[in-house]
Length: 373
Image 1 (tube, helix red, strand yellow):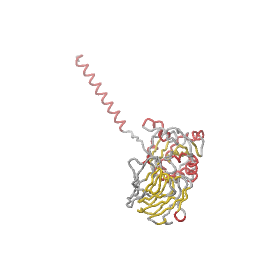
Image 2: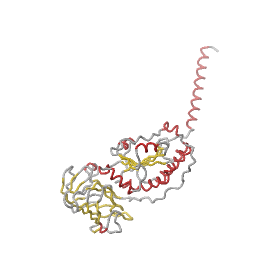
Image 3: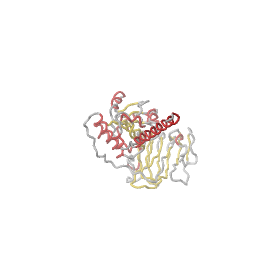
Image 4: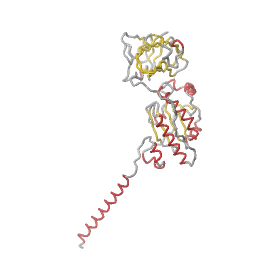
């Protein structure tokens, strides 16, 4: 065969062989199971931890900027994190959505802590009074929290997780890779299934014979109203795009304002009477007495408040009946404010529309938000 014919022929055969080999390689790759970031139990069973960093999983960040520790010490906590499945719960004690998740989280702590689960509560405040460690300690005791809680007052750990929500739960496996991420309430069985699967994976990896329970914690979930008043903020720094102050005087940052309540009132708005100081995160009563009126829809009403105060709760112009009083309302519809935090004032079985009135008899009383369930 002539050399001018032979050389192109050999080159063509080589190219064809290369194409065939490449096609076979791609076919093999396509047949492999594809991993995605998420929270399925199948994923936790089939993934090889040594390969997790290569398929998009991130390691949980360090706890940074911590200003206080409850139920633990810094060195002790770092040792516990090693080789444990870690549930990081980002919460704050005056957030009703956070509070509703706590019965599940404390139950998981009791059930799985001996099997390799470590829960860390990352307490990231929304309001200034939540930065006081003594206030947080009271909340920890109130809710029966025995796992470590760290104070993230400057949101440095919050930012390290790139978080924007309360509450939020991340679960890292025993090698530190985040394998689950859940925002808000709900998803409790799904979350517990992930805990069980990652504990099983941990114990197999470490050569332990500890068996993990298959049953789920049985606690009734709160069933929120489908149509309810949104959260109402009293601080001028929180109301951009959601101003629901119905009194005609409006917000006046850092000023003492004497408010009035108009005859016509709208659902989902709040109205003030008396003189109140406009603060970044709240309003503080300056006059000897004042009142707050809220036409609302929902089956649960909570307020976040501070300062000393004696409150009288009325519904539709009458002292609230004991049958619908929240757990923090005493006899004759009264609340004695004794510490800053979340107070439950109305609790009904079904969604209802009412006009709520709070009569305040003590100057210095401070209100931050209304939340509705």
